[in-house]
Length: 151
Picture 1 (cartoon, rainbow, N blue to C red):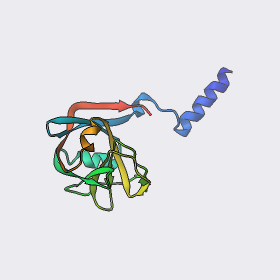
Picture 2 (cartoon, one colour):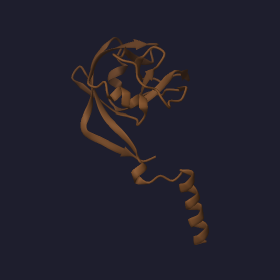
Picture 3 (cartoon, rainbow, N blue to C red):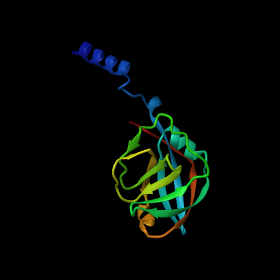
């Protein structure tokens, strides 16, 4: 029985299905300040998210789009290497819409959208973005707050 278990574990490790703590995914905490209120978010470990993080800090005006998201142009295009062709966003997704080169933060779910790349997610404070009208925000990295997210 022990031999069988060891063989199975070796097979999983060879296939890359077993992850060690050293292979844990790195994430970055960010904060979005809007009108004196704070929205906490986390960026994924992806080329697009790292490209977005390199732009921080950012001051943006988020505007309503399709009654489901707040959007804003970014000062530069993000790298999207390795990203899937699209995603079906859910409320709280922090995304990049590659065809337009803009940031999109979803406060409602939406259908699958080609060209939409997930950057991360809002952890709390999403209700701040559900108000109608433009919102002035400052987005910055939370210093010393990189954590590991086991997969």
